[in-house]
Image (tube, rainbow, N blue to C red; front, top):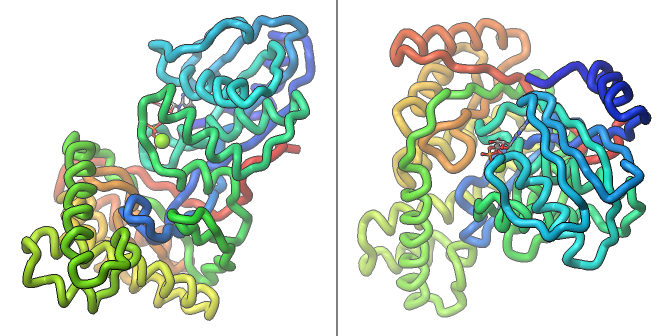
Length: 386
Ligand code: ADP
Ligand code: MG
């Protein structure tokens, strides 16, 4: 996916008769810290080398035009009209960002825009957040607006809530805005404080296997998990009044509360508490350069998500199961909300082609599904491109 950038630039010049300014906003991975965000816990995302590229220039009038090169669709509007969500899905990410900027009083003028992206859509690498952040940054630079990157992340999240109707957390937009080459970022989802950790995976590559399935259980089960976690907090508060969310609870607290807890709620809480501990462990392992340990901890997360939190599915489990049995695979887990999407894996560089073949073949053989493969590297967050 994603069109040649020099070609898009030329098309822009032919179409609009002006040279565009170009911006890049990346997709993201999350090394560890899954289903921890709404429990006020920690996540460990990084921006990647798959990105959206936004080509933009002032139109010289109040008229604006958006062109999706990948979908071969366009949308025209006036920057002065009052904005509301439209039927053309992708347009809403743009209108939502304009709406956010205008709401805090920023003055915009008309512009022409083309974009192309090599982030697969809907695979959990946050192609939507990249659109919002890339477009926001483009407007900020083009019109000389004074907006910090962290505020751009928050506005992009709000745009997605309001115009795309997706009540997402802050992680995706945060990673696309704040990501840094060669680093992961530990984000405290309660305070939004963050800390960079070096991410040199040494002899190992990051490989994503896309299960190519998406079970529609995801939304309903997500809401059920949130409720179960809240139920767990209520019981935990009886043993420790300081607990406001699962992030505050220890395994000791949980052991004391177990007797009063439904077995399922207990397992949900256990996973969430352990996962926060694992985020910290991975940060320490990265600092110590212990990459095999990172892989081990990722496998523990997968087990927790599959058995205790029960948000995996047979396809994701199969991808991890096959990979784990390959020589050179040191760890991996399902990534994202679950019930489909990608697994994220650490594979020895020297064996990476072999492992990829084995996983793709094995997956096809056992479930009849073609997995997609994305080899990714960590990269910088949103910014001007060349
Ligand atoms: P994710 O963010 O995990 O990739 P989402 O469902 O949140 O998945 O966002 C995908 C949506 O973002 C697409 O349905 C489309 O509306 C929009 N989108 C992403 N990439 C592009 C693109 N290259 N061209 C047009 N729209 C895109
Ligand atoms: Mg998204």
